[in-house]
Amino acid sequence: MEKDWKTANRELAQAIGVYRQAARETAEAFTGLATAATKDGPIDPKTKELIALAIGIALRCQGCVGFHTQAAIRLGASRDEIVETINVAVYMGGGPSYVYGAEALKAYDQLTGG
Image (cartoon, rainbow, N blue to C red):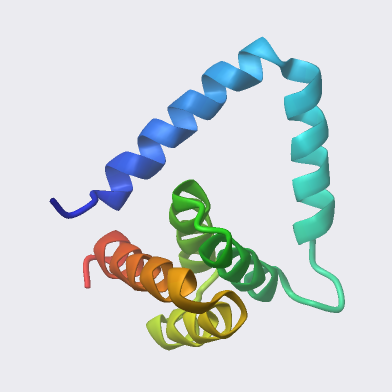
């Protein structure tokens, strides 16, 4: 069965919301780290999201694939940029990244209606 990335992202966001309520201090610290790491600087936020997506693919993190694909789309990433990101992840992560990269491309197509 094909993964529904919109539903997966929504369900994961809900699960994270429950965790944030249970562990406010940790969640706030993580949010601060994410905000600091992804702010505009010498590397723009879109590129940082593409880097995060590549790492998510290489580490085989489905939630990361969904969230960082969505964030990259929001920041204007094209399908070609997603493909290039997958290429780098495959290079760095080998066969498992090849499979998760294919999932990231499916996520992009599904999330953009393409």
